[in-house]
Image 1 (cartoon, one colour):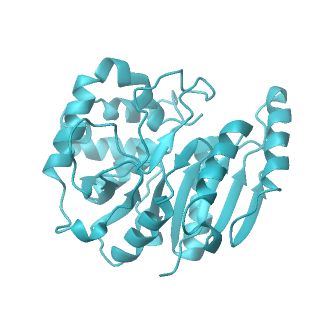
Image 2 (cartoon, rainbow, N blue to C red; image 1 turned 180 degrees about the vertical axis):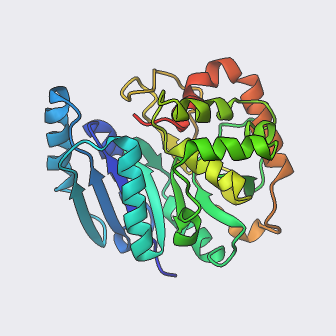
Length: 297
C-alpha cells in the first residue's frame, strides 16, 4: 500500500497545532508518511508573534518519514491556502490526506485513510474519505457513504479534487436548476444552500461549502467512519468563526475501522437518517458549529 502524503494547514494557534501533531505522531503509519505543512503568513501585526511561534515549532517536528514546510510570504487566508496547497500536492502525488491545525486524530486515522484511498482508488463513485462523524446516540454502520464531501480530516485523489469548482454562483445556479436545494440541505434539516449564497455574496470565504457543492452536483459519495477518528479542539473561541461550544465533541475511536464491512457503494439510508435527526434536533445549538465546519478561521 502506497501511503498518501499528509498535508497540514496552520496559522496562529501554537497550542492547537501541537495537539494536532502529537496525536498524528501516535498514528500507526506516521513514521512511514511524508508530511507537508503549509504555514500561512500573518494577516496583521497582532498575529506576527504567533505565526513566528508556529514556524519555530514546526521546524522541531520529527516522527515522520519526511517533513516539508511551506511558509507563505503573505497571508492567503485559510480558503486560498487550502485550495492552493491541496491542488499542488494532490496533482503531484495523486492522493492526499488533509488536516487543519485544530484536528486531533485517533491512532487509527491514517490506517483508515490509506486503506480507503487504496480500496476505492478506481471507483469513480467515491470522491473522498472523511474522518469525522457527528456524536450520534445510535449505532451506525462500521463505515458508510453519504452524498457530497466534507472538511474535518479528509482525503481524496487527483481525480476527486478535479471535480472542485470554485465558482459558487455556478454551483448554486445548478442546484436550483436541477431542483436539488432540499436534498443539498440534508432534506431541509440545515441551510447549506444559504451558506453557499453567503459565500457568493462575499459574506464568508469558505472553500468547504464549494467542495461539498461540487461533489454533490457531480453525484459523488464520501466515505464516513461509524466511529469518529477526528475530534475538533478549535471550538474554544480561538478561531475566527468559532465560539466556545462542545456540541460537536466526540470520543475518538479506540479501535480501527474495518472496511471489510462495506457491502455496497451507495448512500447509506441509516447514515443519512442519523445525520438528519442530529441536525434537526440540535439545530439551534449546533447552528454556529455546523457553520464552522464550512467556514475558514
